[in-house]
Length: 358
Image (cartoon, rainbow, N blue to C red):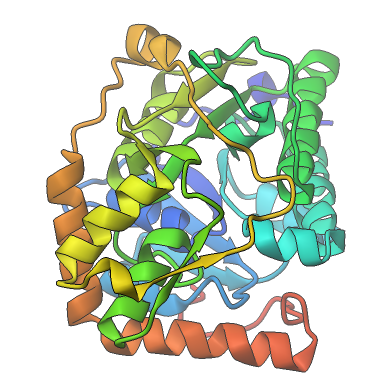
């Protein structure tokens, strides 16, 4: 086993970062930020299975960047992961199955990707002395909270197959730090929004349906509360954790904008020029958590994190993005339907030789 201290000195070359799930919504935003112009301190390899939720179109802005390599593959493929980790210094792990409703319909793929896939990555990171290993998780692992906010020491109490699979991954990450000394850092974010989010998620689902002249489904009485975090703020926080975080530490990442689903629906109707007659009440989700809220004091005090994006402005810009990119979300919506129709949970992906591989 190679330890982190055994590895060659990195000071004379760029840090080689493996980003899993880097063609998805949050991962691609993070990659585009890492590859900002005139930044010579990193090279990035994206490993992505390209399920319905990931697309190379999300990386179009950086596809010709010589600092970027793309590998089409599955984090559950131990041979692929081991080969990649041997040539990298750090990991930022976004890859996950992430839709709660899909997990309720069937949890197998969530356990496979989120728990077992994370274990495959952790095993390879230990073998090759890679670190830090930033594991990107969710506030849903804490379960629901009626009042106040969860801090990072709160015991995990997930209530859906999705959140249970992510909690399993969190505990594996913690165990690999404690057992093997792996430099693991965990982030738990609140609900993300912004450009490039798949149209199955709440905000883009409502916006795209309203733009199509369709009604929108509101679960139950709409009193469920979520804290909204702009994807750019989330990615800045992940980068702070990578560069300033402490080994073995967990950091909550919040956005500071708590809204009921009914309040959010009203804002989306207004932004799209629609009225409440377009809202259709539907039966509540099974095990629907009433409220999520995280205390991100640790991230503020240790990392200097604060959300920068004003929610009203961020929401308006997000709605405008979907207005201007109908081709993107129609393709994404079609890909999801095709995958559902084929019965392929993630599309069997193997390492491929695409024009992005270098």
